[in-house]
Image (cartoon, rainbow over all chains, first blue to last red; front, side, top):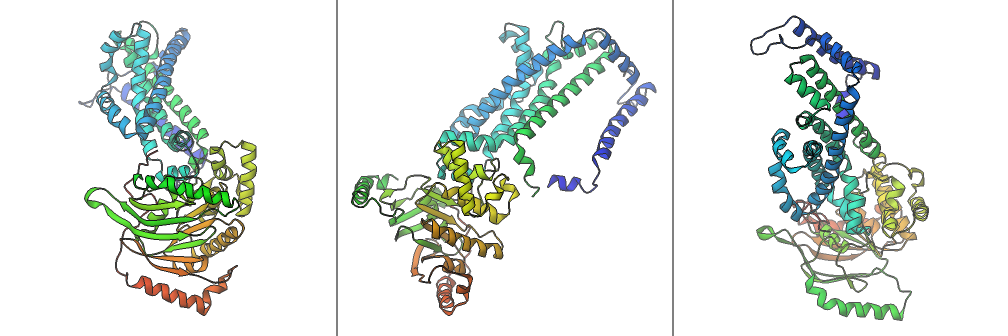
Length: 269
Length: 298
């Protein structure tokens, strides 16, 4: 249905890619003029914003310095660990809460209470709770990813057509088989939506998490560049986080599409 | 449920007695006595089916005919085991119904095929639940699909099929369990007239080969007269039977039947039975109870 609206303009794949690249190029162009002309609009000023050229040379320096790989490696390891744990906990809790009203009554109130707490507010407690700073950083990326995964799983489980569950019971499915063969696949598209959003929010919390870090990490790099007033490097860090977050969300989405081939067909017939 | 647990031991004894005497006896006999079904809770609770008595013989094709909201789907839901009756006796082959079972296959108005399984895996689902290995269950499922004329779409997704094909797959998926009862809730109600006619003939054809007791819910008089051995006509709320109408047209039946004077006469009779209820519109009930009841206990 949604694709129906989009096909009105009926662009080919190449013109679509061209439009997407063009919009990014336009953003860079606006940035270029705003920063080189030091535009000052009163409520917002670009006079201290580094220019694209400065950022490109900062990227070049980072590439030359051999520091990029350790930065990337530490950040990827933290995001990946936190995210995997959030996926396991989020999907498991989501299935239980979505299926059982009792579990919902018991588990949802504390979870709803914890949900609005921003990652940055967790820093002191994370430092107090975990013996190593590495574990506290992983915990913070975990909190970032957990809630989108949990809520989308619950939503997906609750949206499974009750007639499908009734039918599976009439076909001899046990409660365990219903969970495995009906509820889980039925909720899978929604679970992957959560996993994809969770991937993004996990990166979102990275700078916060790596404020604790002593030496490595893209988030640490970004934050320390601000502390030492190296403004071009801040933008480099921001761009790296944006790219990695976008790339890994895209990867999760592709895995989701691959595991739910039936889902794309629905509504098109 | 608790009400007839006292009796169930009695009836089970009765049934084992029967099967000892004649092990080859056909299965799928339905017996209901003073059966009442209540839906809703608190002040909105109402009696959807009120103290009905009926008996359906093994292999019989019975249509439940009545206007929308009369409780015929609710009764079907109770036979499937999705709805627990408030009072009375409801047994299949002497055994009290106390939950869904693959022995009582259910086909809804809109298909309930699993969108994440292709056609053959959907049909094989019941066998998978029984632990049949993959090669064996695929072989059986393909054979079943052949019976409904759909073996060539075995690898498609359900969403790629037409409405009529989806219902044929649904029927194959239920029949693979060799059920004692086939329960159908207006299964062709959402199809266009042409497809509906074809499906009715296909159903009679399949039923001719696989003689299972068939309870078919419809509000379409033509459909009921064309298909059934017997029609139980229901009145709306509280649902009760107002007529037990034998339909003695010879089988196999063809579409010519619907234009014969005998058919017209019975149709007139059914119209008269249902006409005095005109002007009362009740919300459609489903075999799963009332619409807001989305969660089903496992």
